[in-house]
Image (cartoon, rainbow, N blue to C red):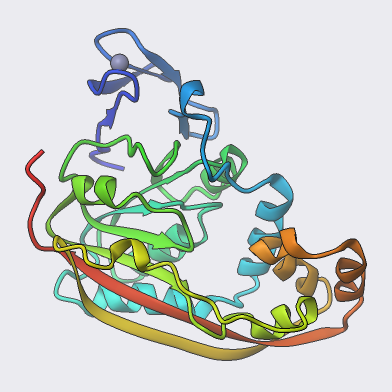
Length: 284
Ligand SMILES: [Zn+2]
């Protein structure tokens, strides 16, 4: 990457500079670069989070499942929106909650195909996920940290992406440039209804994850894309799908065993891609 963005020290907010595999600020707070090329900026005192990050099993299942292309139409919708919007793909983009890097990788492919110099960064609280992302050689700045303390200076990004991930609205507004875009993906009402019906007698429709942005005057909803498709998941992919979703926590061992034995599962995928634009920058 030609001009990596400076990281902000999570302890004292000064810039970190990279010297011989260590990020260091003027106050000598030091964070070593992992051999895979990411940096862990997560502080011990920040560990009390509602979202401890996905575990290794969930991450491996999501990587295997997504790499088979089941969510391709979602990543196509994201890259498609970026490439047809007035911005093009020549942007600095931060994936907040990048996981094992599937969407960053798809964005990188799209930017290479169009020779568009998209500059990518990703953060996630799950160290094993970020490590896996770094191994993909996506050419992206990757850091372990939670979304409540984005390790970048104000107005650093043209685009933020949040796919089924926790988002801190205030932090999102801070690191976005004025007129920058937030692309937020959450579940539609019937998302994974075929999977849910294997687990619950009565399926409650998804509520979506946009409530945190309702009534926000600075981030304004400017576009919405609905993505709905029926897919048939086969073999071991069925258990991977279960394991990568929060349903996993609500499934009994008996249910897991019976789902694992299904030859195939037909389910609806239903997403909303919502695009918000930062109309003004908070005065702080
Ligand atoms: Zn510092």
